[in-house]
Image (cartoon, rainbow, N blue to C red; front, side):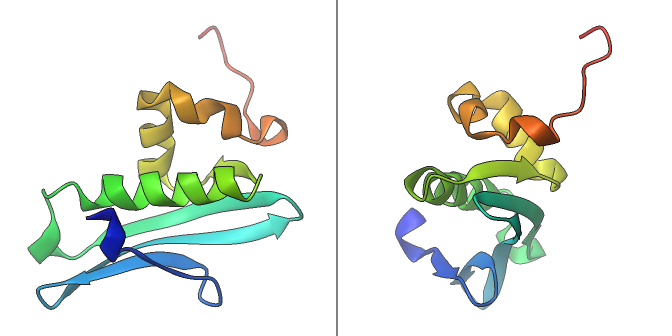
Amino acid sequence: MASSIQHHPHDQQFSLQQDGHSAELAYSLPAPGIIDFTHTFVDEGLRGKGLAQELARTALAYARDQHLKVRTSCRFVAGYVQRHPEYQPLLDQAAKAPSAGR
């Protein structure tokens, strides 16, 4: 499914269309060398098919390929990175909140 994901740099999003429905992962570029994944949305007709995970995987691969540090304002992407430690080295250390006893 990853092959159907399109990157739209001018719109700052990764998206896909399937069966008349859409899914997207939006981002911003708040500083040089930083990408902030801000929002993930999957139409109801596509939910439960793992498409949000595919979007996150594709977007994080893009960040890695472009040597960008990642911020995860989007709760879904933050949770995805937490569950997949291979992506944690991409995180922008300056943006990490101090852990309170964790």
